[in-house]
Image (cartoon, helix red, strand yellow):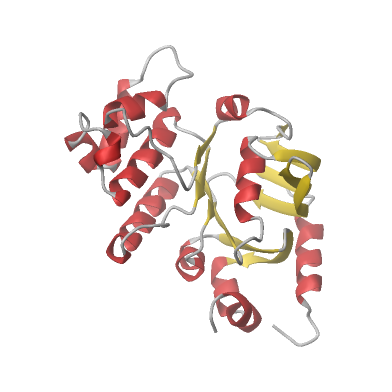
Length: 255
């Protein structure tokens, strides 16, 4: 990045271009937070159909709030959240799910007292019956879940619980999968495996929007990345370009 090109100019230039983009998910000028507390200010973000997009940034930047705002779990204040051309800015989570969006939160993302199979069936709760083909697809993606389908979810390892949470989110075959810190709390030897599974989900056609603290790994795999700082867009580019940007590496990736 040249000395003349400031971070603010970068964010502004990308924001100007993206507000006119019609993506599967299009977030424009979003202000959001919790109650009266505003966290996000004029955030712009686009996820195209089948795209893999990552949000990175320092702690407290508002990354997870973007996810929660899209899914109807944060307080909407201003701007637009559009999914597949429809304004979903103020919809409740159940209505967002019915539009084709699934969300995997970072914490408390399984029903500990239910079995693995019961957790997966809960993922299809808006349907009249559980589609066996979706169960089969989840078991094909995560074979360990089929082996442990009668086991209580609370007794699974951290990596297995994360697989179960993602499997439950896939039970409705969503167009967009929201993942909040999927590698959090995992043993180092399981992190690559988790990212590989996310790659496979995206390769099968599901768009992914992911918040991730493991920024270098996330950016190395995604199509496009957003760097949020203090609730605002700071940088937007392809994952590879952000990894190669000296200023981004120095400020956010440890050099």
